[in-house]
Length: 299
Image 1: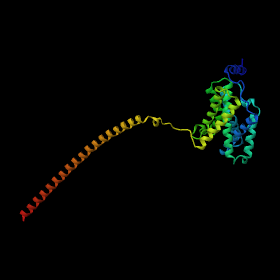
Image 2 (image 1 turned 45 degrees about the vertical axis):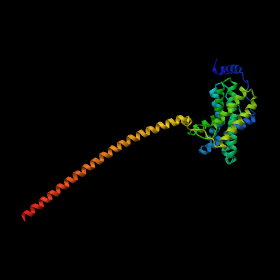
Image 3 (image 1 turned 135 degrees about the horizontal axis):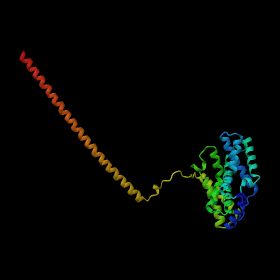
Image 4 (image 1 turned 180 degrees about the vertical axis):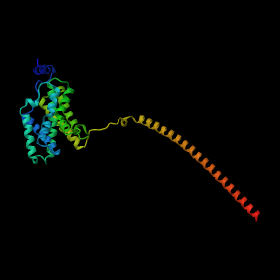
């Protein structure tokens, strides 16, 4: 049997054996398309910042709006590709991108609103992505990872196309961490606490937005370096410091002894030079006296 036709039965078996809900969380179509529009608008804004043409703006809009879900579906390989199964997704993204590109004044002064809607989209995408992986019977860790890819995969692909280090990998306020928190909360509520999918979806989206707001309000940023020596018990650090001090003291003593030897050698050499000069001076004086005596005798 061709692999394409074998994918659906295999997926059905996985769902039947998973012990979880056999249907994905039902997100209202209006909210679903609204999230696609918001994500596509952020893609167009990035294209305008980098002076891309209309084709580039459309491309980035589709990547940001639908790239995360496409990346998730490629990894899952269950034959259920959202961008192909939802006939409104791609046209909605393209129309939103076109309007934003032609009439940028609609959103150019709405940075704060765009940021709020963007993190809302991240929260919703993280929960929906985790839900889809859960429905097909994957392990919780895989579900969390799929929620993460769905939420930030579009921005990751955008930055790669713009030849930039992906923003989710750089130090900054919580964005990817907020997505992970949202998808983790969704899986925990549905699988661990048997909470209704829609209630879990609402809570996880709110949690994602709250984590993002918390990091912005208190300027909490992801770490770039971790130095475990700072958490070593004080007694161990004291012993290390004492050992270092002893080593420094020993080195200082050796250096002092070497310097003393060099100083003594210099003093000895100077004394020897002075003795030579004094001997030469005496010899010259004696020669002058002899010369003077000879002159006196001749007279």
